[in-house]
Image: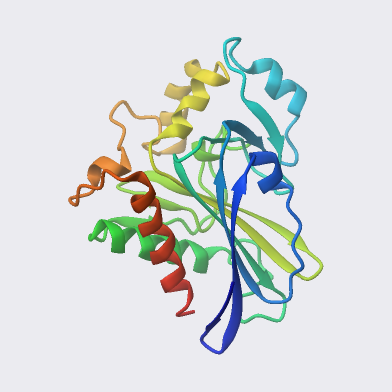
Amino acid sequence: MQYAASNKAFSVVYQTGMTEQLVNRIYPLSCRSVVVCDPVDAALVVGSSQNEVEIRSSLSNNINYNVVKRRSGGGAVLVLPGKQIWIDVFIPKEDPLYVEDILEAPLWLGQLWSKTINSVYNKDNTEVYRGRLIGSLSKLICFSGLGPGEVLLEGQKIVGISQRRIRSGTWFYTMLDLYDTQLQLYDLLNIRSSVKTLQENNKMLLASKKHHNLQNTFEQAITDNLRYKDMFEKTFLSFFCEL
């Protein structure tokens, strides 16, 4: 699907399938591209530098999730059908949105996610993190740390972003966690004892006892999950058109 935005053409691709297929897809890239992913299986997606064998061995015995390695760095992310908004974005080198500095590069995307969440939530209580990567467990679990461009809602990380440079531009892999599913990773990887250390060292509320469920914070009751997901995706794309 082709669109025109601010005199810049961009394409939108909707993909449904197994997580491994979504992670390892290959597209011909000639312009800004947005890929909206809808996984049908439960999977643990690990970063490019993580050891798949070690991750598998650390999983709780009663868990049989697929373990999939992505090409970008960062920690593990839990993927469950219908529990997250997964949107990836490609920016070619000649695009005005392309930034060489890896710390500055994702900030515009974090601002876009922040604007999207605030619009759907009808409030203004998100924050885009602009510093270097922090979090003692961030190399193990993506949502246990904060990296540049990532978004917090009332102090809790709600959008994770990783990036991968290729010759023609940059891929940004983003995920909005709707149901605090990422908190399950502490149990899945048998590191519950580290949660207290995480709270004290990272200055974040991610592992606090009082978790925020994003869906429950909405004043507007949305019971149809497909409609709810559609709201975020359409709002994200509408703001992307303005860039």
